[in-house]
Length: 327
Image (cartoon, rainbow, N blue to C red; front, side):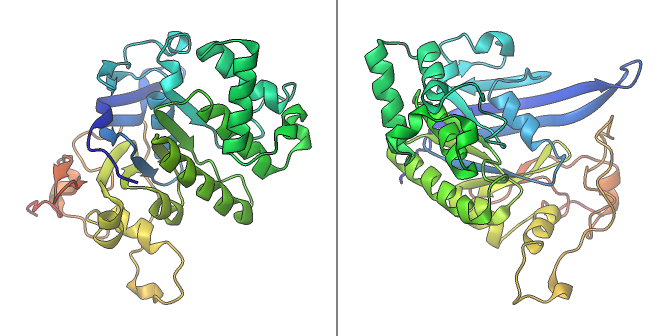
């Protein structure tokens, strides 16, 4: 599939912070000053450890949660200023759809498969009863579910079948951007491969853009054109999938890749991280978020936040060592 260089979504200076504590004077920096672009027909993988802010960023970009500050532009329209409670009723809601992590939790147990897919069509597309029915059946065909499954309820489906219903519901309204929040993590390994192949086929057929959130780098490598690596709310590396995997610039990215099981590599050849991530509550804004865990840390890392800087064609990295920072 040919990927357009025209940005579908532009994100600038995006942050999401949550007040914590009894007096709510402290802030948890879930997403901090993120800049991103997603091209038309492009699949962008968002990776990082649990708790790094991936899902929060995905929910903000899907306009399920309001940003604290920053801009979100979709097809040239600023959508970040539209309150999430109002976005669902706007004509733009159909342009961004979400496939959630747990297919069971995301389906209404009182809705049949047909009703689950038809509901967003009635709300966002409209049309006669016959038109809605035709669109539901077409969506079932697209995800490989027999049409007779339309009369079944979620409890009558397997995990993989529920995942297909969730995908059918999302693509039925023909979105421009599909946000996939770890869509295969709750599935058996044998089913994961089938769902990934389905997603790849649908993207090729429909030309949709994907934001694919995952902690599984092997999955991301297979599906995504570009990768954004996130650590404690900040993007630390961004670039084409092949470049990020074969020439990682940030030590955190190297550690993630080295954590992928590979029986042909010796353990002493791998980057190992010591300790755990620091607290995202009121983090030091004058130090690298990775300082304290970084195996190649420089003195400047504890006194200055490295900016996300161009490093090769289409690649960005936030690391003093990678961009020539002085010790």
